[in-house]
Length: 368
Image (cartoon, rainbow, N blue to C red; front, side, top):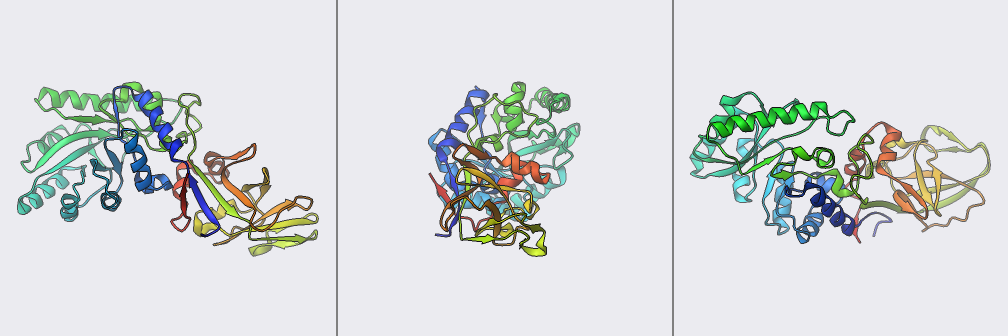
């Protein structure tokens, strides 16, 4: 096996799912396992969560749903993203649930389904302030029209919060008010919908009034808080991914020695330069050059020089005992030290979501 791998703790994911259920109470969780379960492995995560009682899942694109079906996952799968009408036959064949997000799309679906002499179950996406795909929340006529289309059964209706991970929840409450106003309008028209949903991870933790029929846990399933503005302690979340690599070579170099492309790192004293066999092609950001840290022998050591496509170098004290084959940690725990996805994200001006989903497919996932 390649001496680079991501250890995925499925027990931690199951624990986090139990935390979702505790917070959601009567609302049913619909785990979001798009982007290969945020880098953790969608098939394996789905199978683990089914054992914990998960009854349905959400992904972003049709291909993600197909992968789950081909792995034997039979539970309902909602496609959260855009699915063009010319992909309807695959949706039908694999029994996937699309999101319809504007009137022209609904009419195109109806035309295609009429030709195929088939019906489909869908969810409607409502834009209450995200500015992304979705019927505008006050486009009442278009939304109600979808319920009249004979080949389309609207099983669910949902919205998505733009700022539920911020300290100020006023905009999220405005979005929820807009969504509830729409639901009230539909009810007055005699239209009922089986599944109403709005709450992402941040709203699961902070906006219980948004839980409705379903909740959509994403990042919290994998043991991460949505942002630093979401107060800790609301949920007992356990990170599930540890990124590891084995030392490939150790060199003792003198002071004044240049390291990596561009010689941007120059040693100030006699130093051990430790090479690890992973780089930005594995999802370890080049932006971490001369900025990131790794764990080795239970201590933190800095990245030395530019991160390469397939390798990176670390500066270690010359008195440290390090040998080829020793285990380094780039995300996760070693000894008493921890490097979190949130910490890495903060170093390069991004979010923990991107850190996790950026770990490439050429990094093997090992399930523990």
